[in-house]
Amino acid sequence: MNILFLGTGTSTGVPSLCCTCSVCQSSHPKNKRLRSSVLLQNEGTNILIDTSTDLRQQCLTHQIRSIDHVLYTHHHADHVHGIDELRCFNYFNKMDIPCYGNKSTLEQIQKNFSYIFNGVKPEGGGIPQLTLNELNGDDLFLGGMCITPLDIIHGSLTITGYKVGKAAYITDCNGIPESTLEKIQGLDLLILNALGFKPHPTHFCLSQALEAIEMIRPGRAILTHINHQFDHEAVGKDLPENVSLAYDGLRIEL
Image (cartoon, rainbow, N blue to C red; front, side):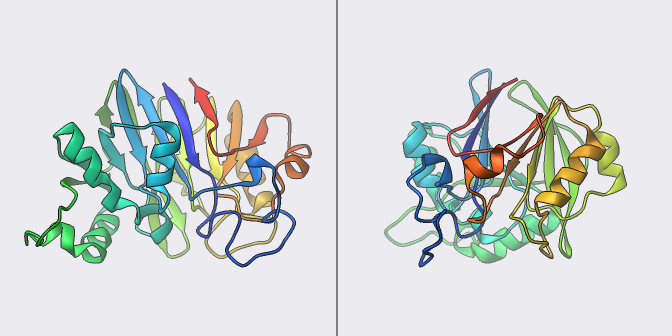
């Protein structure tokens, strides 16, 4: 299985519009962060986690021509607003795309993108052809992968992380329930959000993410969903030996 990091930034991306800080003005390619998303690839199957605002650019950059399934973490704009780009994959691959999320996520997606789901044929244009599948806590078996949904705390919301084999993808997290902690012990790889240096009401900051990693004890941890406080080289050199910063285009083979 391969994990391709399509985007590793927070909701504004990096550089942030209008910002003149040193990271936003940096020419270092690893300081350029599109909105967070990853692609799981196994046995010819492509599974996308979140349709980020930057999905079109991400797919063009990495020559992604098929998406077989979409796993949603939650309904916030930076994780969903590329949903209309799925139309092209429907058209060229002649297939509907199954999408998965918890009940509240799917309800909000249907509400916010009612034109896709209201059953009204649009005049003069197409809509994504999607089937919504509510997660019920059971494992999914997709493309030769066993995928376990994980309850994650994001402010007042319970959102979804995903364990795939001995790897887990957890983003937009400021708390991990005990029931989830039990499921993610002994991972080879933990992908976890670390927004910036300062505490935040709905995301782990760096120190909180490192505390969580100490508790989970994966073989390796990669930090994602990063804001413009982190210069890739400066922050990366001070991290523990088994912890690193993600960057757009990073590919991990498991």
